Length: 284
Image (cartoon, rainbow, N blue to C red; front, side, top):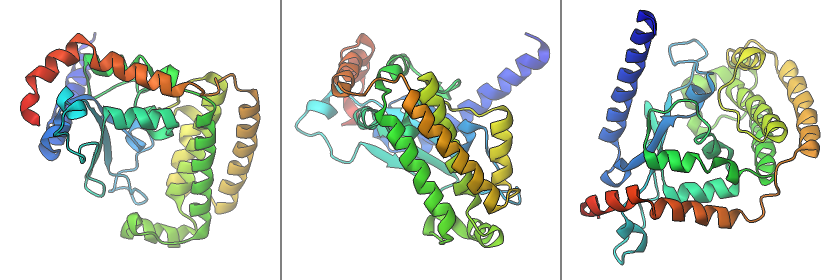
């Protein structure tokens, strides 16, 4: 490695360490037993427009997957409120799922959580995280294409109706009035359709955007496209999406429950988990 490459690597490691430490400071004790931590949202896709940008409304979004001691899953004292933790609306938007909750969402075909297993880089990945990631292809199926199409349609509806929503914030509401449509929803819609097409044709999840498509989505987020141009691109992508669904070789998704159970069994019976579970009994 060159000196510059070494310095860049050191910078990335330092940034990752700092963010992970910040996450651990903000989450409850049960959620600190994480096997996977990474960026999600615009940071993962490469489409971030930070708040200081005139059209930027993106905060820092991160995810985590928690695996708790065995007593949580089978003990009489297992709490009911340790499946999900979120800091939605804060400058560091954290979303953490317990492993059983996550696997349930993977089984249902949730596009957002599926992306968590297809990243190129992570802020933290443990041996159990690597085991979970190795199971990712078995959760793919045609049922996911319905989810991609449904999510994209919902973004189109939100983009076009011109309604202010509570989660949007003052700046995003102003951008809605300025452009006559929600530029962030428009970008989400295009990205979802592109992701759905990619999944249908390649049997893989697309996370990081590149090239022409990245440039187009960033242009939409910057408000450089008129609504008519966005609507036309979405129409063409919808047609391409439907054609891709007709051609896909993805499995049907039948038998997904068995794959989910097998995945959890592999995790809960792994020597790593058994050892760590014994060490963490004090969390309950």
